[in-house]
Picture 1 (cartoon, rainbow, N blue to C red):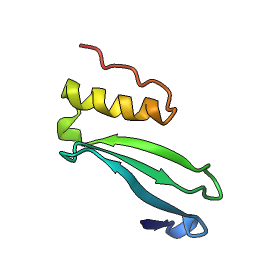
Picture 2: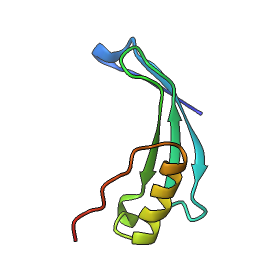
Picture 3: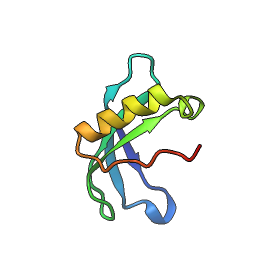
Length: 78
């Protein structure tokens, strides 16, 4: 668990983040975060930048996101 706290003008804001799923090889992760004064609670599926060009990694991350009800992410143009 990680508690994000704003700085400066964002000081009144805070949100709790936690990694709820992680790829066995660490290439992607699911991060859940609580609501703040300005944003709703949500879920992000993130992919390591150096692995973002690998179709198998992107497909796995898309499957996890779809299982969580996330909208489909467009595939990059080839």
